[in-house]
Length: 238
Image (cartoon, rainbow, N blue to C red; front, side, top):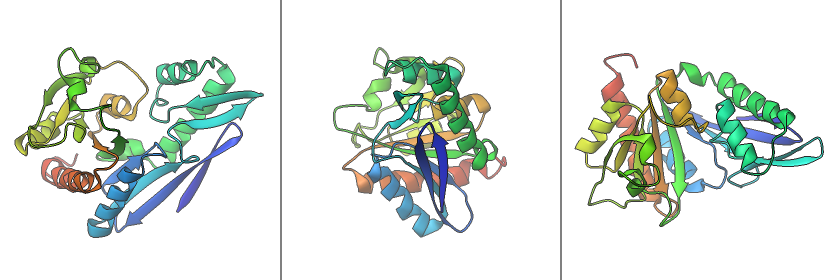
């Protein structure tokens, strides 16, 4: 199934892959992170679920024109006013019309798929070697301000890690010796990301980051995340 959304003069398509019940729901928002989508599809084919992947020209950023101005935004920085302002400003855009267009798209996306009513969300992302890694969340590192805790597994690639908002998820993944960091929901800077959005909504969220060449590792991580949701949320209903 494909669901089109307008943003300026552009169309962003949400491609939905589903087998059986739409649980768990997985989301991919960066159209150049194809390994993450491939990993999600493998697990859905094996055990069911739903994957919503944004398609917008095969690029990380969404590009559109509005009022003769060219705009680009990071689709994982549009789920708050502060995030929208920052991602537009990063590309030298301060148009209120562009802000409204981006906010309308983000709202329509969340509402169409009823994501605020999901028991949990799994996000799928890829990174490149030597860029974002679990080491980025250690004390004093680039993203330390977002993290309440981090566990570094010596037997796994530092580029393959979980970013979670629920302490139960952190404890589960630490016990299984995966790289994992726990978001500080109360103090994390509002960058407009889905992790901040769902963290403040109290909806358990897990982001699976893997190097773009590590398909098998990401498949394993998606499988473990699904097991984790079944084991940690089944008794509470969330």
